[in-house]
Length: 432
Image (cartoon, rainbow, N blue to C red):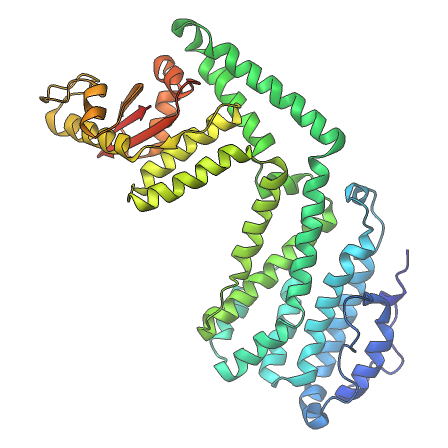
């Protein structure tokens, strides 16, 4: 493996005072191997950089050179072969880390080009944060000492390279996720999925007395196993990722937080939201390969629109979504929100709370049965669950999950619609 780009510095680099033009010419030569042909055709620092900034460069150069030396050692370590990296599809470690190494170099060199001493210090300290993993807290606090005339150029210089690193990391992440859900890995995951579903349905078809003790020991573990396989989060994915990709992610997220901090401090209009964008794109990549079936996801997306239009409370939306995710994990259909069933459910929950009863049969005139209550709202119902004791939708769903009759209702294959309504700690769930 070629590591010559990280092994040596040019003669004379230990000089205490150095012009930006000299730094440019020397470093452009020494780090030429780091640059991909498609990354940039321009030098790291233009050879004709304005020497009016040479005084600032002279003050910062010793710190930068020390940082560069540390960076070179870190780069040499990064470029060593590691057996675990063989899991990355059709990509060597050198190729993965080149853009990352390039950004770290650029962050070190940018201040010499066109920034105040204060901004120089910010970049050098950012480099130190990356190398020591000490966190951005103090550095972010110190951004408050910069004015917008310094923050805006800082962001502009940062963004010369940030998109390249961000996009390269996301591509590497996408490739790794894909490798975990193709070929033999996919076949093994599908085998486990089939087994979990078989275990769940075996319990589901038992009589209520026989199934009750198995709901906690068989049914919920099956759901949890399916969720790990079909809806893994970033933490699960990175538990098996190569160390190099994990390190790449940590650096990218640190830089994303730094960018967000600049934007927030300067109160700039910026739609990227760098850290949130990284996390959401990771999630989308995982869902695209391992996620729930597309037809089910379309219903969940439609439910979001219905809930927004009909002003369905957030806790009721959350409860409905969880039930739909459970059903999709099991290979069942997702249920479409029926806002009229939500109204009927909410009304029954209120009636129970205010009239001190807890039953499917209501003493309220015209609301005796679930079918009556659905008809009053202009819809039809095929089943109902009720719960009392918590304001949490997760608690209500779990209560129903571990109760055989309610459990059978939630996972009945013939249901097409769903409604959920809370009043205080009373919940009603209706199906259609």
